[in-house]
Each structure stands twice: as C-alpha cells, then as structure tokens.
Length: 330
Ligand SMILES: Cc1cc2nc3c(=O)[nH]c(=O)nc-3n(C[C@H](O)[C@H](O)[C@H](O)COP(=O)(O)OP(=O)(O)OC[C@H]3O[C@@H](n4cnc5c(N)ncnc54)[C@H](O)[C@@H]3O)c2cc1C
Ligand code: SF4
Image 1 (cartoon, rainbow, N blue to C red):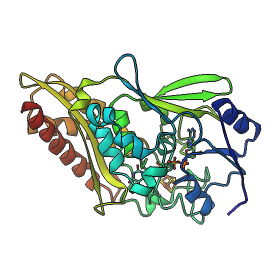
Image 2: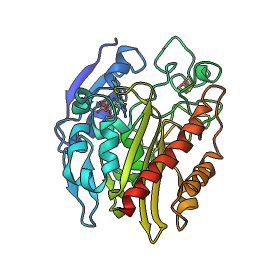
Image 3: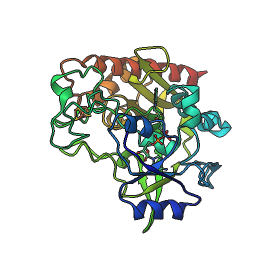
Image 4: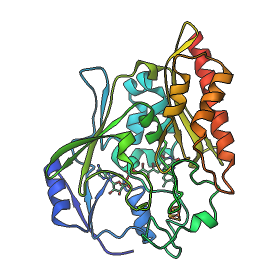
C-alpha cells in the first residue's frame, strides 16, 4: 500500500483548502470503501483529508417540510432518524439493507453516494478496466457479468452502481449540496451521475475538489407509503442483484402519484420515469404495473448472462406496487 499523509479538517473552508493545495489528496469519510481500494492499489492518494469532524452531521427539517441530511451523517443515524422512518420509510429500509451494522456506523452519506462499483475487474489491478485505466478495455463484457448493467450501459463499461441508499434518494428527488473553493452548488441526484458513454472513469458531475456537504430531500407526501425491496444472492451482507424503491398514492382507485427507482441495473440509481408516466392517472392493478415495468424495461440491453435481471425487475415492480396498493387501500 502506498504511503499517504493524513489530516483532519476542522471546518469546510479548511477541508476545501487542503484539497485545493494538493491534487493528490482525497476526502475521507468513514473510509469503508476508499481504504479498501487503497489496500488493493486501485486508489493511490498521497493524502487523506478526514471530513468526519466537520459540522455536517445533522438531519434537519427544511422550511417546506423536507429534510436536509448532512454529508457526514452516518448510515446508521440516517436509517434511525424518526422523520426519515416516518416520512421516507423506503430510505430507512434501503440503508438497513446495505452492508452490516458495523459498516453503517462508519459509512457516511457523502461517501455512500461516491462509493465505487463492485465490478470484480475494477478492483483487480491485473485486469483491463476502462473505469480504472481509461482505454485499457472492459473485461466484463466478454467475461463475468451476471451482476452487471442492463440499462444505460455502453460498449466501454457495463458496471452497476452499488448504493442502496442512492436508489431511495433518487426516487424521492434528492438534491446533492456541495461546496468548492469557488462557492456552493447543487445537483439533482438524477444529474449527479454522468452517463457512461466512452468515459466510464468520469462518474459524477461534481466539480474537481468539491466537498459534498449534504443531501436535500423535498417534501413528498407519497413517500410516506413507500418501500425498498432488495434481491441478493445471500440473505444479508451482500450487494443487490436488483432492487427497487417505490412509493404509491392511490385515490378513488386511480394512481395519483408514484415514484420508482431501480438499483443494481445501471451505472447509477435508475429513476424509472417511463414506468411512472405509464402508471400516473391509471388503474391500480397487476396488469397496469406489469405494463409500466415493460415500458421502462423496453430500453434494457442485457448481456448474455444477465438477462434474468429484466424478469427480476419486472417481478419486483409488480410485487412491490401491489403491496403498496393494498396498504394504500386499507
Ligand atoms: C463488506 C461490505 C459490504 C457492503 N455492502 C453494501 C451494500 O449492501 N449496500 C450499499 O449500498 N453499500 C454497501 N457497502 C458500501 C458502503 O455502504 C460504502 O463503503 C460506504 O457507504 C462508503 O461511505 P464512507 O463514508 O465509508 O466512504 P469513504 O470510503 O470514506 O469514501 C468513499 C468516496 O467518497 C469520497 N468522499 C467521502 N465523503 C465525501 C464528501 N463529503 N465529499 C466528497 N467526497 C467524499 C471519498 O474521497 C471516496 O472517494 C458495503 C461495504 C463493505 C465493505
Ligand atoms: S464493467 Fe466497467 S468497471 Fe467492470 S471491467 Fe468493464 S470497464 Fe471496468
């Protein structure tokens, strides 16, 4: 492992200045992803700027009834917060479906959004990988890809984004707040992750050296009737092979509002706009849910060994929306 320096930042401007002064420096959240990648040589920063002591560890209500979640809030504190549990239950369920209790106690909101793919070739420095070494090739396309992307991928990379939390945040229109040495900025989470294209190594639209300061969730009454369902190869302590965050509001037997986002199917949490559009104003039954899933999945381009994900996601849409519809009718 390459030697590295370590500094703890006391305030946001200090953290930004430290990163600005050293192009080889990286922010350190809980370290649960970055440090693992440093051990395997995938990441080789010369300096870590620890941001965990920054005053970004609060969850506060916004004036309009939404929530502002600080970037250093741990995954455990986020999942346990009473407002999150009550108003955005799918977010609590998504976070609790990820990793383990010990990891969630360390992992931060900012770090979770920026965690890297779990594609095995990305973490194996002996293998070609366009995301790790641009232009070197993609080992997964002709190799092991049973858990790779079916939506939004390219000939240059078919990796998926591993975050569970990000899927629920995407369904609820979260906005990422950040600071740079030139001032603050915001990015809707749907614009935060860049399309893969021929530059899979460029993953987000964050400006260089930007510090994520928090995530803002707008008020969403529909989110109170929401659910996260994760399918994985082991019952616990495993990444998703497919997941869904869904919320449903039904009035007089008609879908009044619906939110859908998919996980583990694309390079980013996938907001299912086509399915939402197909459902809104329509009937609340399994046939309509299946047709909406088909509308979204018409864009799927599965590889030889991951076509099962199309069926899996279709079944998840129907199952989870049916459960939410039943609960909305009670
Ligand atoms: C065994 C294991 C199982 C796991 N299972 C799951 C799972 O099922 N589901 C799931 O979603 N996740 C899972 N994870 C991943 C885990 O959720 C992430 O490692 C964690 O959320 C990353 O957060 P962190 O604070 O530790 O980030 P770090 O490792 O500290 O940082 C990650 C990246 O974010 C950057 N960064 C951190 N904070 C900021 C900031 N404020 N501003 C700008 N950049 C920042 C760092 O520079 C780094 O590039 C698992 C991890 C492990 C080790
Ligand atoms: S899928 Fe992406 S991360 Fe995996 S080997 Fe191909 S380029 Fe690398």
